[in-house]
Amino acid sequence: MTDRYDAIVVGVGGMGSATVAHLADRGADVLGLERYDVPHGYGSSHGITRIIRLAYYEGADYVPLLRRADDLWTDLEADHDRQLLYRTGSIDAGPAGDPLVEGSKRSCEEHDLEYEHLSSAELSDRYPGYGLPEDYEAIYQPDGGFLVPEQCIVAHVERAHRAGATIRARERVVDWRPTADGVRVETDHDEYEADRLVITAGAWAARFVDALDGIAVPERQVLAWLQPREPDRFAPDRFPVWNLQVPEGRFYGFPVHGVPGFKFGRYHHREETVDPDAFEREPTQADERLLREFAETYFPDGAGPTMRLKTCLFTNTPDDHFVLDTLPDHPQVAVAAGFSGHGFKFASVIGEIMADLALEGETDHPIGMFSLDRF
Image (cartoon, rainbow, N blue to C red; front, side):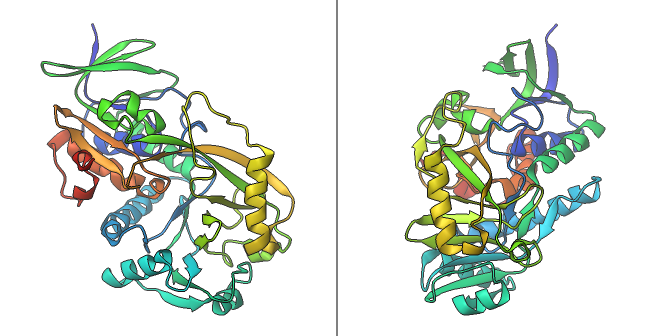
């Protein structure tokens, strides 16, 4: 007989692991299916560190979700044997009046977040690892920091296991179809049925949801870790996580943590739309050159020898906002997709939202801006 569950979750990365944990915590009989290992380095939820920040230039409407996400990460960490969230503060910087700086400031003011507005000189005096142009300015918000994504996934999976969830790794979902009383999911190993289906398949999401074709688009991303010439300036207590707008693009970065090197990247690295199963996973000299030139200009004390280069995947929507919704023709199917390079910090609360949508068909969280029908 085909195994039957209350809910099946397709993809057990950052979003899927949180979803499985929240469903299991509510007493649901849940199955998580992951085509690779748990965790793995083929999608979007790896890379040693991920930024979390409450000052959100992408839109002040995100801040209530960020506050809930922050609380949930703290709760998860208390239930885990390793630290998940490191507070460094966050910096959003760029030319005076730049939308990145103004958007960050606006989100702080609308939601009564503590912040400081710093000149470039004030920033460098306090944090000498930053070497920005004189006419730049920055918003410092003390609650920002970074998450350790692989351990976040481990923590959610271990919580799900304790609550009775079943998670099957190295089992690829081939297809799903609606049934009279739910869904049937076919994998390369077996078939399963459930009342509800949640698709958190990252760069592969559009393969399971026709409505996401052309909406959730995978993109190749590359990160660099360079040896600092002045190591003390890039330690977590002296180097807040940051976002920076410069003529070369929008970049982001972290202090040294976990592996040698100061980590940073360029949003939409070389704007390469890719097939997630067939792209250049090994970073190239061109990738390294783009990133090194940036570091030498704006963080010269961090631009020592290359320690590490890694690829990952963004999955971008046309407006760079998420998709969190149920399918109009199949309300028993919920989708979380298109996180556009800034989603991991929300994974804890997205798990809660997807559990709401799967079990109740709605959520009290403010997700109207993430509806699928906006496209």
